[in-house]
Amino acid sequence: MSELLSAIEVSGLSKRYGKLLAVDNIDFHVKDGEIFGFMGPNGAGKTTTVMMLTSFLEPTAGTIRIHDYDLSVKSLEARATMGIVPEESNIYTELTALDNLLFAGKIYRMSRKARKRRAEELLEVFGLSDRANVKTQEFSKGMRRRLTVAMALIHEPKLLFLDEPISGLDVQSTRYIKKLVHDLNTSGVTIFLTTHQIEVANELCNRVAIINQGRIATIGTPDELKANIESVQTVAVTFDTPEGNNVPSLDGLKGVNHEIKSGNGRRLYTDSPADVIPAVIDFAREHGLRITSLNTLGPSLEDVFLKITGQEVGTITTSPGGEGKRGKGGMRK
Amino acid sequence: MIGNLGQIWAITTKDLRTYYFNPPMIMFGLAMPVLLFFSFSMRRAGMSRQMGIMHLMSMILFFTASTAGPVILILERRTRTLDRLMTAPLSMGSLLFGKMLVGVLFAVSVTLVPLIVGLTIFHIEIQNPALLLGAIILSAMSFSALGIWFGSFPARSVGAVMMPSTLLRWPLLFVSGIFIPLERMPVWARTIARISPLTYAHDAVTHAVSGSGFQSATLDMLLLPVFMILFLFLAVRLYRRVRKLGY
Image 1: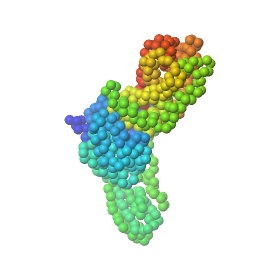
Image 2: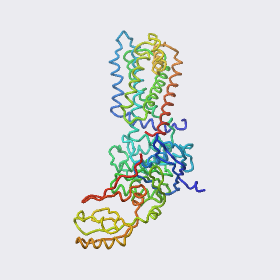
Image 3: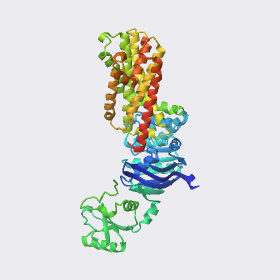
């Protein structure tokens, strides 16, 4: 019965490129109607998995079922239920926005009347009506992104693959796409979201899977994942100084394992906030600094990601006057 | 494929608007026959006007139909618009047939230029107009499918495909009876000519225009679609490989 409620069922999925095992026997399912986040460091097997789910790449082993269609047997039927938004906007720049949408409708076998109605509707929803008959080579990156999403939605798919939907977009377009994802999901569309932006996953996703070295390292709701690494706790402190960069390092304070700098603030990783808080207060007094905020925080989804992918906070360093730098980890050869 | 006719036609018309109705392509389509016409002077070596037009039509068909396919496929691969088509509910065979069809329309349109010039200015006579029409269409289909096959090799730069395809196409031009009649060729060259679709295309056009040829016109007309199917089959096989290995 549970299979009937799954938009995606993946079982024993592997992909090998010569000697490299890019995806190693993974299993997971995406429930119908949820927003499912798929995250992982570069080279972890994330793109390969998505390419297999969208039928672009054949698996070496395993099965994929999309809305109960076995992708290796009923590929065309499965594809008809999907909309795909790749990371790179792939519109036809020689065509107008309207013609791009109408073409997408034809490819998905929509009737002339249906595709015209839907194209006009989507142009309106995506704020492109006034540019409907303009060749898209004149479009900004945000407009191209919106049109790419609109093209993926022309046939009213039940499942939408979104690959880095807000990468490189301005604040306005980012908000727009986030709201759209939320609204689409509310209307019943299942969303498979691939992103590097952990806060986006935290904000939008019902469940998140993290793939690392070709295997699913963890899967669950953002809260469940955070609960699993509760040992990671932090103390966030902000100092009132116009020269925030000149605040000395707090890394040597009692109980502080690691320090991340952020503007005038510091995030201090610790096993014992009770030791760190008085130490920070003493530190501020000693250096003549005024504390404007001091909070203890539980682990963030970013902490979960870093811990699971091997890019632990131990690889993060701070340099005087510079941003916190994260060591490169989790890459797979 | 029959069930996909609407999608095939959508790809064909989209490609026409996107890639063919632009200045470089129109220039190529117009310049090609004119340049060939002057470089391949009909009066040279005592060639008749009728024969000159026949040779010109075969060459134009061959080059225009087989050139655009690889360029378009590689451009679409680079802009990732091909990914959109490859993940749509459409078989690879239908997708490539749509791409092939646009090359056919382009090649047939351009080939009409020397034909109209031949009919109106040089007053050449066509012995079998129906055969000529069929020969032009079937030849364009087999040459366009050849171009699609070239374009299906998993390359991302146009040069990576155009260089080997040009190296293969030019020798075919010399062994297909256009420059040297097949009956005057050595046996080894005639053997190679047998595997060139241009041989059958040129022979069919020759039959239609002059009323006689090197071999049976029926055989020519039967083999041209066989070449088309073979090239499309090989192209689909290459894309199956792409689906296994990625590109």
